[in-house]
Length: 294
Length: 290
Image (cartoon, rainbow over all chains, first blue to last red; front, side):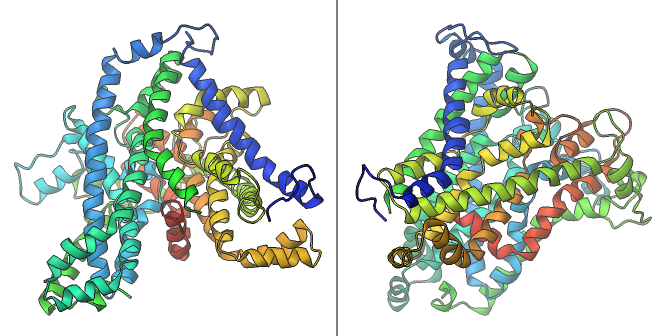
């Protein structure tokens, strides 16, 4: 109901505001209040505890000079591109195959999606030991007679970030598949039928008729994966704990380490602000679109 | 209708499709299989033998050890106390966030006021923020409230960052109900609470299921808040599992680690298996307009 008289609230309007209040209060304080607080801290010389002495952009200047942060940004780029790219492609292929198979939805979908239900810490633990050269994949291949097989990426500073990609893709691909499955179900069937009448092969049907209609699903997948990539933390901690050395540091692990273990809270806060800006670039246009569609 | 009903496939393509799908199923199942078989094997079989092989000497001892006596952090308590910490965090946080979300979702969809969409957008944004941006002030606030390092503190944290999602679920569901439902009840003189409890709630069983499943999964699987705001008496299962696996003292007991990992996964996996349909719906309403 639209409230007709803005000077007079009915009893029901008051009740509506009261029940809305907890949600609004929690968001106002714990989301917006806290964001402002952290932004403020990023402009102070806070170390182990917050202090309120203004230092301007000093923390940001320091941040962008730190090698540790450069590693984190580079890793974020590698991880983000591969994570989004590979899981989108594989998720789309799996959605198409499941859609073509009569038992796909019943048998295969639940199997592909279950990793989304479990904790990144569990995933990290499973992959940590499976990729461990001493007992995992490399050891298994040796036992099978491939004596020269080597797979020690998880212990190698140059390749460890790719093991994070492997485990992350394992976890999220089923989710991407579900997004594309929903998209496939929403496709206009007359366009497919006219394609069939025109004698298009199945491959042409997919590349020319069906996939071009999945724009909304691609956008959803990109937004979801993009913001998940930036927030990735647990998986790295469980899989490599940011190592070897700092080889698998991400902005999230950097922020935690500078704020809580190295006692450079101002720099930690500035890293958190950088993460927030990156997420806002992805998510704000998307939320605007969601809200405006009503 | 699926696309396969429009297009035609040869028997050979059908065979290829099933083969590829089966290979992917193996890929998705291998890590869980590895955890399962190695959680019931002696350490010598893991180190000397093949991780993919079935156990020759089957034992449940490593499960018992992970649950009751394994060294977690500084204490040899096993994972049991942490499992119950997670239960103590999840139940109140899920129930309260679902309650708040159902109210705010109802108001934001059926009790429209000026700026309600903007308000919804602002609430929704809270779902997506990188939580690193709130860790420092939240630590302060929990300290001031005297609930730092307690499960109550973690309940509050999960409530604060859960209401965005619960509001989203309820609002988008209630937006699909006809406005006349509320208007005609108002004409009949029904009041806000009466309309909510006797007209809206009875239609809400599916969205309540979706919300509870989503929140339970998210909160059970949380690590960042647990490690930031929990202490050795209040840490959740995920943090304890990580401490168990990362502890560098003594031999690495892979079998105990795997048993612990399965314990941490079981509650949400169980929910997924019995109510996968609602789990999928939750995922979708978080990503695509539902």
